Image 1: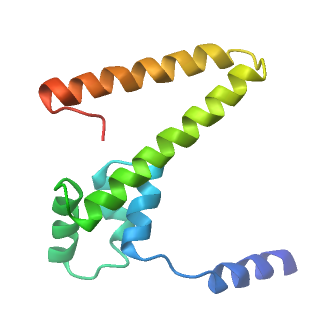
Image 2: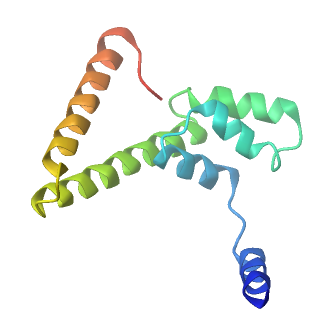
Length: 120
């Protein structure tokens, strides 16, 4: 029981994330904008704010887009590092996982370039 209380207290003491920090963190986890809006619902009280944030995520040059894109890139880099580490460390299927991820990223870049489509 005491452990649960300690965890609750430590969670209360952690600094609250700003909306941009949440957007960046969600980008790292490659969550779609709709999921980010659900997460931000408690922090942004006006529906107009939520609609604006959702729109800004897809508009290059806005702070929301920059946070989302940089988070997404950081998440891809971390995933690539982990897969590469597994492949180098001779983890079972590590090389296969790395190859599949690189193929997925390559296909997504081609779709984005040629058709404006991506999985974000």
